[in-house]
Image (tube, rainbow, N blue to C red):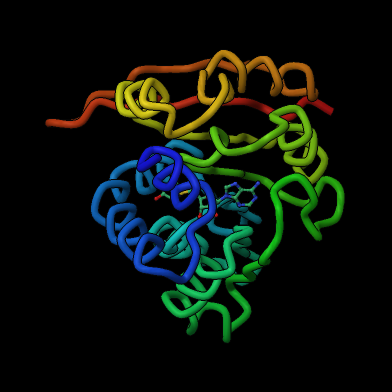
Length: 210
Ligand SMILES: C[S@@+](CC[C@H](N)C(=O)[O-])C[C@H]1O[C@@H](n2cnc3c(N)ncnc32)[C@H](O)[C@@H]1O
């Protein structure tokens, strides 16, 4: 019962005590994953960058700092209204200046034109998608040819949560997501173990072939 409730809040936080607690947990626990996803996708100052499932918005703050050229633009999508509002508040000056655009929408249906995004990153997000192939195809659609996507995760934590049924089904497995990426037109899909001083995490990479 508690696992199902936690899974619901992690997958789509609501404005509630549970959602607030989850937002604090995400802020404390996942900054390192967010910052590393930003680093690993090799953002250039004039890129158009997209974060999927940004949650409270820490990764948006990191990525925006790298987009120093006028053409550099950051887009964020999240289908939790609570997270959309929380992140909008966190980066309100960047939204006001036009550097950042946030969409309250599903990853599987983004209001973005075809082949317009250079880099995509996301953390702790794909395990909650009901249809990995739909999500992966939509990411591929919006990416420019040769664009890079990076997702970071702590596999041991994710596997432990899945074993407690926090995430139902098998979509949490990197192999499932990587298969969906390949089927959707990505190439050079691979996973790497990363070790920082006291943190171990994984990074999945995929390049949009078009
Ligand atoms: C576990 S939280 C992770 C938040 C942040 N990336 C982090 O690592 O701390 C998952 C986030 O992805 C969002 N999300 C999950 N599935 C989504 C979907 N299909 N479309 C848009 N957002 C989604 C949720 O609303 C939530 O904010």
